Image (cartoon, rainbow over all chains, first blue to last red; front, side, top):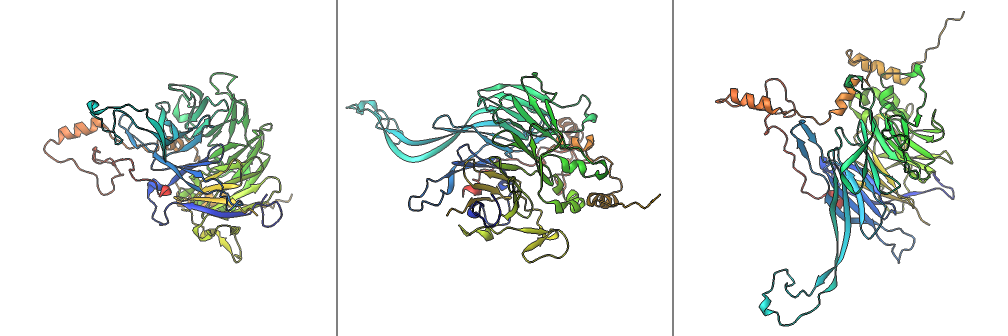
Length: 446
Length: 99
């Protein structure tokens, strides 16, 4: 529960920050996705340079029983490389659009990472022992002259320094003409979907040479194109159900049992628009940039440019709750259109079903508590990095006289965007990505 | 009849008026197919091997006009060459997050 003070309120404190301090940001270092694994022990980031960095939470410190483990680098690898499709004259960016973890089945960890065109399944495994005492090989690997071998011994495993290896186990390629925006693993843990601007495909994790097309909204005549797919996700419990959102602010829920090609939705979620309020910007700001189911699967959350909406799956005609993220930007839409910020794609995330979080500009991020209806604005900044000091809430002054400690809308830095945030599945630990830094915040433990 | 109408101009409409004042030729529907088509074609750089080879053949003894300082702007007489296309190499540098 949010707010300052009160017994049950979460008090967020700075824990760690990763990344370079300097302001000169190399393009490759721009963080493009952040995701905790199912246990929360691992935290993965992807960047524009196609690299993945995985952090692991340290075991709790026995001398400090009330502090949670820190996240330190566990593995890093180049997931995707830049390509140029000469046939279509298309540059294929190596930027990692999404990472999704598979639930752990054995000692190794698996994740899916995707760029605009290709999805890869990566296996991350640990090696902490190695065989020693070969008969025909020296310790450095050179082969021994067999004639010098006078006795035989049995090689044994000896401990070694932990090595974490990442290897690509499956490459799912050539199934998307347009740019992939989402991947989502099904609750059957065998299949997953990938969505691009116009199509959604269903894959089996073991099979790379075949993919089933389950949604196709490409019109026969491209001049009739009116909307594109912006995000898609499988229902957390029903393995036949998934949703996809559009650039026109609608969400469609589809049931794969109904037909092979789910072009006809089972449910259409759309908030009626007041025609008198319509403007040039209406459609652009209604475009949904992210859709996420609550952990229970009863609700889903959508993020459009100015707000976060909570939908009850049983009610299609309007959201049950709407939270304004930065309503003061409505009177800045002209300049936000000119500098392209109006097209920024913010993501959102849940903790369970009670609190939702999303990013904004000026390195601010916002949380909304559905139960208490309280909200809070916090800032990811190196100026706040004293561990265990509670973060001070921020306030933006939309108009009129600016109070002390408030920041005016015109002073906001629109280059400092928080597009990607993630909430630990079990604890009050959050990961917030600024342009090139990753912040980790935790609640203050008493 | 009371003909006095209170017209409240929403902030959005005010912003729209500002934009139209700056760009009078702006189309009515921003979400039209042109706009979406542009979105679908993100990242496209034009290299037509046919044009390139024909241009090469025509100008056997001359140098092909190369791209100006702004290599991204490929228009007019300039035929893009493989050299003009930005060299895309994967970053061999480790992410600074891991540093």
